[in-house]
Image (cartoon, rainbow, N blue to C red; front, side, top):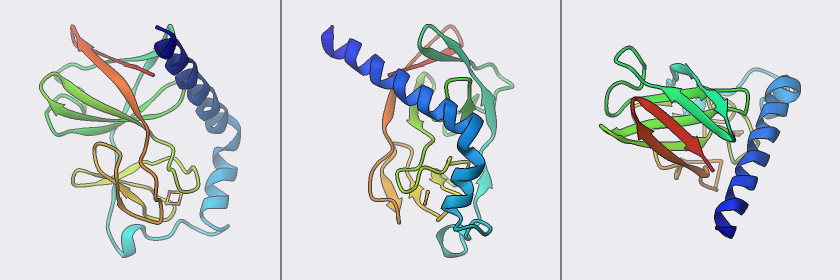
Length: 161
Ligand code: FES
């Protein structure tokens, strides 16, 4: 119980930090990550598409996402960027009732990850790539993206710390 409580507090802190960054610091962060110019071409020429965006609702320290047949996450194998007042989360549907949720904040210089190529997430700033589980596929990032807990019931995905 104690560790669960601790984890939730950490999750909330991450959400708060991400929320603040999204409101106040996103432009500055993007500028810093891009070195003052436009973002570099990810992966040395890799063309990354923008992740489809899905809105999430913050409820009791969790992010809830309704997934119906029209959702970008309706099919197994789909990737999406869930946006919410508590921050952004990368979500992959790995099976009919199984999802993997990751922080969307890059471990290199904290840019928001918004792109993908195949089953790989791509950071727009310097081209770091991460697999569906958050492991680094291509640098400059060296640390994995942290994972959140997910629960799927009644067509609603709940993401928690
Ligand atoms: Fe540099 Fe993501 S912030 S690769």
